Length: 302
Image (cartoon, rainbow, N blue to C red):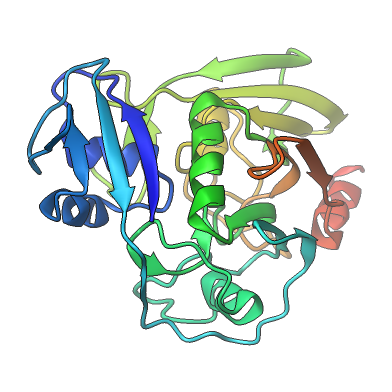
């Protein structure tokens, strides 16, 4: 069993929402199960499922030993960039879905990690599975980290919360950005009409900050580096679109017409930096731009 202490930050936030927000990999339903089991306490007393801790109050969460899940391990090739007894970092290709979901019951990164890692898995969500600490979209390539045990998962979750786990992306944006760098600070929430999309939501959205730097300029396009200070769903895509420069190939937040030879948005998770959950030593990893990204740069350099 592993124990985690979480500090409430917002007024009137339900305990299950707080847990799901602060613990990567923990779903709202998983949080509710922990509350129902009495595994979440406030001042030594079990927290109610619909309880609303006051800002500054500290919840203590005891994660029970995980149970196996009904997901089949599959021998899917993985480009492993780094691996030890606590974590594994993979260079995910475009098209590979991270988690099984409706429409993608198998053939995912989780299926591949279950096969590759064997019994070395974390179980933060109450189920024996690789601890996916953060996600990247199906059509985004690049580095993604998973924890092999609960101790590592909780340590990396804390780094996500205090921003010491740093992720840097490269992208091609449509149009020419006027400045050589800047920051987009705009809260992101679920789109009010299309629930599959995200949107800038200054009333109910969660804080989202993206720092961008121009790497190269091309006729009608800009090659940029984006550093995430927060990690909201579709954050880079939403933020760059909000300033009038959607990602090339992003048919959700940009032009609806697909780009020939490009599967989805032109976005690659290039670098990853974190403190090793066991040693505390910094780990910095990088993977090169994939061939498809380099092909796009050659095509727009006309």
